Length: 78
Image (cartoon, rainbow, N blue to C red; front, side, top):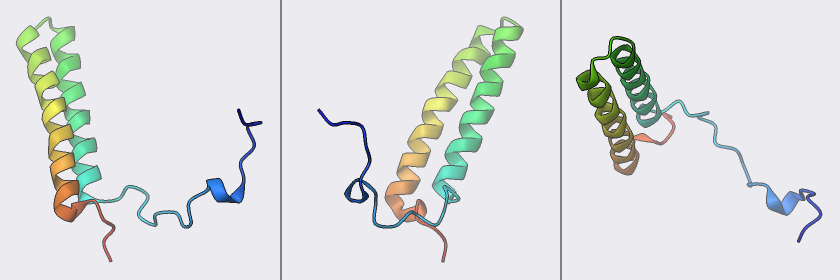
C-alpha cells in the first residue's frame, strides 16, 4: 500500500495540448448529447421507440468516436 502521495514519477511527461478538441471527441460528444435528448423526449412522452432509438444512437456515437480515433482523427490539429 502507498501513503497516497503523488511523486513526480507518477505524472505524465507532458500534458496533451488539445484538451479534447479533436474531431473524434466532438463527434462523440455531440452524438451522445443528441442521443440523450432523444431518449429524454421519448421518456417524457412515453414513446418507447424513441427511447430505444436514443439508446442505439448513443452506442453508435461511441463506436463512431472510437473508429475516428483509430483513423487518426483523435490527434490534435497542428
